[in-house]
Amino acid sequence: MKTILYPAPQQLFRAFMTPALAERGIVLPIGTRNPPKLPEYWIRHESNGGPRGEGGATWNVQMVSKYFDRDDDRGENTAVLIHQLMMDAAGVEVTLPGGSPFPWIVRTRHVSGPVNLTDEDRPELECYQSAVEWSLCPIP
Image 1 (cartoon, rainbow, N blue to C red):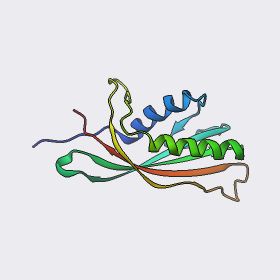
Image 2 (tube, one colour):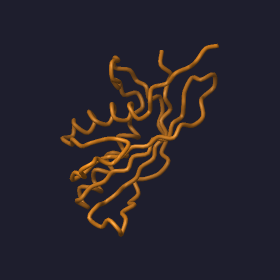
Image 3 (tube, one colour):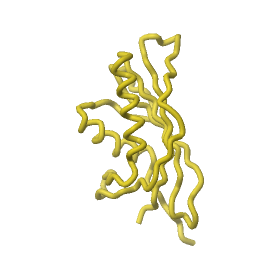
Image 4 (cartoon, rainbow, N blue to C red):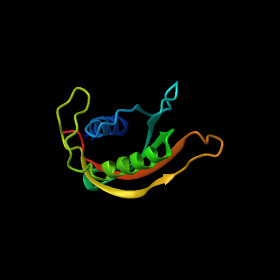
């Protein structure tokens, strides 16, 4: 039996997004939970695995980012940038921990966003959600 493995979506998201934002002067926490002490801005990321392509050639994963910011103008601008970076990820070489640069993301497809999900119970925070499907190639 041959088992086909793919990169871990949340690791891939952090490994892609951290340097892409840093190149634009934006350094912020990226994780699967909110930071213990809420900073000025951060990304909470989730992923939902989906179908595999023919013969396991790709795995379609929905990448969902929730961007939180205390500043509404910066929040909207950064949310748009995050969404566009997610859309432009195809073909970008990403270095996973302990690995070499590799273009893991074969295709991208817009799902939704960025949409403002700001909660009236937390008026001090802007929250923007984006969802993009990434087609990932298997680990060679």
